[in-house]
Length: 281
Image (tube, rainbow, N blue to C red; front, side, top):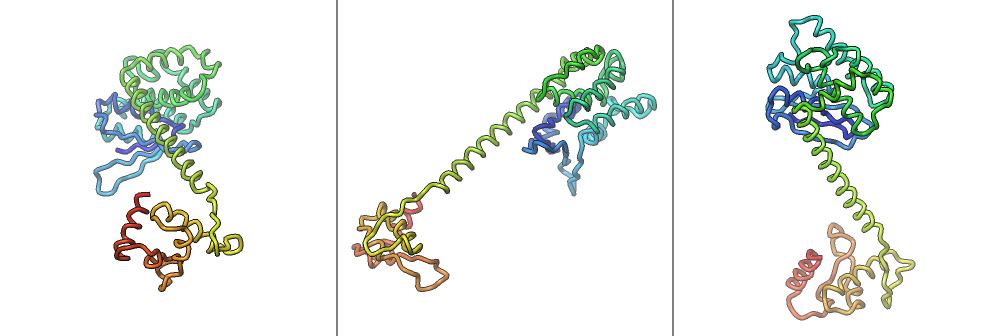
């Protein structure tokens, strides 16, 4: 299963759910993507005839429970518990990273059970979903001051943070985020270097008999002759004169007449040597 998610909406809850169900780490591969404004998360189950794309963390959480054949986190036999979970999951599904939405989610959590949100002995699906949403928010924002007044909520967060599956989730997701950010930074540096290289000013040398100021083709030939002069021991003027229009238009705009270079040896061998040197550059 490939879990693709934007950098600003890390799936801590989903990874904790998989860990709570004793799923191997290989069950989910984390693929952060640089979509800073998107809150969509998609899971693509692998190994099927036609991979299915599932979007939204709540939909993915339900899929995980079903695919791992476990009703320990979400049992449909208790209608009241199902209803309570669904109410919280709906809030998570609608939550985006704004103070207003996070406050609504925390307030709803605070009004639930005094131990975990919906059960007295262990977390349920909604616990992990709410914890994941809150954790993703607090990783990139300061915890809202008014949330500290929600005593049940803050006590529950503290208990969830200490659970092994939650610690594992933070470790895995944070590493994936760090690796992705380093890759993005490296790509940005490489792209900037390429742009700088492309935008660098090329000095057009002066060659007797050429007129680069008024003839763009002469300017190109002068630069090319200067570059070739660093590869072959031939005067730049001779190189300039050896650059001419090819006999066939499909061979480009400029061709180098090797015989006119006045070098000893077979022209084909000399040409091959020049091509090899250009490739090395």
